[in-house]
Image (cartoon, rainbow, N blue to C red):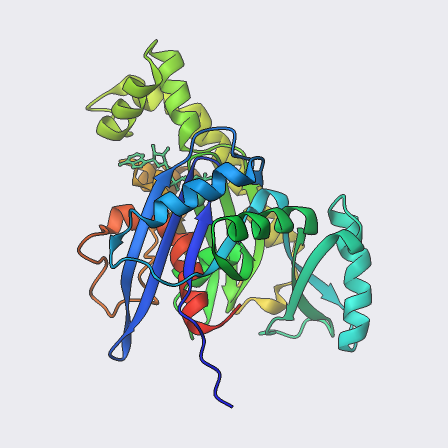
Length: 358
Ligand SMILES: Nc1ncnc2c1ncn2[C@@H]1O[C@H](COP(=O)(O)OP(=O)(O)OP(=O)(O)O)[C@@H](O)[C@H]1O
Ligand SMILES: [Mg+2]
């Protein structure tokens, strides 16, 4: 009669790392029970696709033995699916029933991704309307290739874990970063990771758009290494030490600029698309007042300021604790605020596990 939802780990798989987090209920709030980030050798995951299931499973098992905080006992897990292989969009449709929506989405999605309807997992939900410029309804559709998801399920099984669900990365990120039960003005989010930058747009109470820009923090290191004739380790250290501070090192800034400017151009393109192409029915206001920045790479000194100037909009570091800790706390002792910026996906998945929202 009473269903107990098992405690479950949030697992974020990237090409070069696995990150896990486990949340617990603490009084009337939440707390972080355990977390771990472990790097992966190359050749196990490529652009989000698992290429060596057995070895990845071994690394996940080993990472579970090295957690900070309490030892993880639960076998239940919710894992991320890579954005670059998935599809998340708001699709406007004329008013219709649920079964008609299912049928119509089939054509809409086949038009957008090179897969047949029978080859994808699809989830959708209607999103709230704030204005009524048309009679349309708006559906947030999320789809991922079955073959990709099956590989994730097989790997989790090989790691001795029991998957409760899989979730596209952007959905987990916004769950962590956007304050719950609040109607938000349209807010772009840039998640600056190692390999890629995700551009997400959140509006009202829903994710509305996602795109993956194939440039990340790794490309900054490569550019520093090439332009300053340094090996990759020295370039990485210099990037972390100097950042975009021209007083400390003008050549680091100059090396990073072409990549950051390309990301700015891409982000501007998506913001322009949102402003000019999307009906404003599902946004509470048309104006973008701020842009949020997350991902491990967002710790780069001066990045938020650089992007603010380029995008002509204030860029702020996001707070992945906004739905976990009570203000003014912004981190838990062992996981600093800066480090937690790379844990957004993972914390969003761990929240899904607690809230049973998957
Ligand atoms: N203090 C710092 N200053 C600058 N960059 C940093 C700092 N700390 C970490 N980084 C960068 O963050 C990057 C890792 O980011 P993140 O953990 O989000 O990547 P990931 O999740 O493994 O990869 P992805 O999501 O792109 O597949 C590394 O390139 C690292 O250089
Ligand atoms: Mg990541």
